[in-house]
Length: 335
Image 1: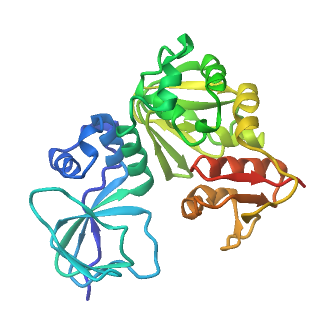
Image 2: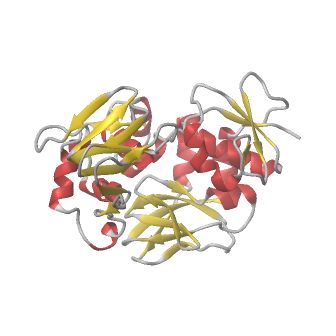
């Protein structure tokens, strides 16, 4: 009988209590691009990473299945298909991912694999390689209103796909309206079921997004959250808890609607050349629900313009905003 896969390196509690273990830090330092990532960002990434121990002749990725993660070989060997190749672990030198890049992966013997969340990896590496002379950074430092523009959290927020839809003047309006709030470790920033009057940008520290005990995500400096309740004019749909002392910058509902939402989400009277997405209650390949849109939007084609139909007007607006946040063009269609 085959031995069950064992997770031996789950680090979900790390940002709350300790620092990154020396061995895991060593692994991350072997990954190209990670040498410039600040230690606090590595801790955030570690919270979404695992070390997997698998026996031989086990499928890590089966053909036809997509894994939203990067895999790095620490010990043992694996075989990939499409392309057909064998990978053997090395104890030194660079760690390069073997997935994504193939259609299927099977272990050849006892194997250890580092699994890194894809979305969080891309976010961290994008911030680490952000050029100081980028257009947004230049605009940021050109005004006294952006005297804090050199702070990494603010640069990451302003360089997000969503904020790139705005002009520097609109950035100024938004940042001028920021209100700072501090939360102690283990304090709830958002409470599910309570009304929402603000959305937030995390300035410092790390936070956890949960619903009914299930972890939905991990927030690090520069992350934007809390917009769902404002767009839908409804209660909060998840809890956000500080994992350590944090500071957030709050954006009031009227500022969010006037400066950000109205300029990022553009309603159209009819669907143009692109692909339609339909909102509804059924969960199928043709119908999206707001509950799963963040996850499923990772597989949308960034070269395509999407038009959102179905649901209420507010739901279509939120769906389009969530897609735009991934750098993909999207428009809600009027009734």
